[in-house]
Length: 94
Image (cartoon, rainbow, N blue to C red; front, side):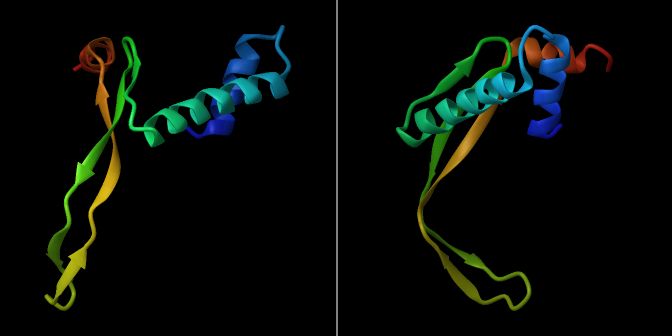
């Protein structure tokens, strides 16, 4: 699902809200998650999951085409761990 579809679904299910207000709400939530992660914080949405930042050390990798060594700098990467309720709902039909 893309963000515009999410906004559209929320607006349809909440006819008392204007679509522009729903869009502002969704953007604010996503911006706050990004801001928290940029500050090194963890964001937990109960029942859904937790967003955090993992630190990846510098390393030497290989170019798959040529096999030559390539230096990869250290970096921070976003990480998402699903919550128990989300995992259970995903696996309920399995």
